Image (cartoon, rainbow, N blue to C red; front, side, top):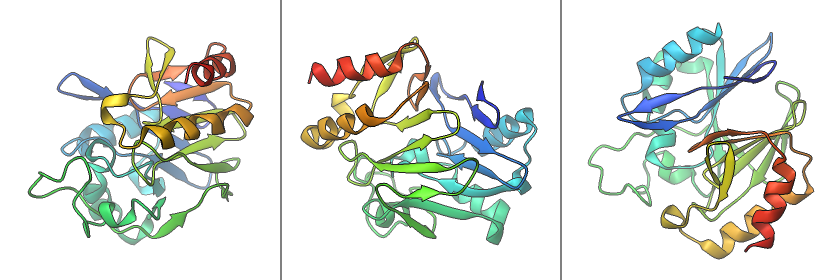
Length: 221
């Protein structure tokens, strides 16, 4: 689903569990935000091709955090793209993504997906890609969870800091949140943003009165 020009919400179905990575691109490059579950690489490839973006245009992967449904196809992407791609993540989730520490929620996996993180992202950083991407450190779901604000289209990519249901923001998903106090503080960071659309990794797009929705969620905390 096209959010705006050069911003596409992908839809990947994993045994009935639909997740929504985001593809951002311009004439120079394409950036994938999160990679789906393990085993979804071919689905991901098809999703990109349906948008008209081939894997060889992919120059960066930004990971919102370490959970297996977000880093699942990273090893295959790295094998396919080799040195042509750079991986971005927050420092606090980097060792888990690289396999140096067991995943906080998926530590039972014998062979978890992993990949080298090339660049560390910090709160407030602005990446000069595709009309500028602002990094927002939003811990709680995991220590190194980040959200991304696409300034040109006023789109918030919320990762798992919030979930959605039928276009409505549902707030924090308590069962999968490691630190509720941190998650509540993270939600307040969205109050200063002018947001037209929110993409939740679980729940997809919300684009109706989202600033009012976010205000209401914060008032309810």
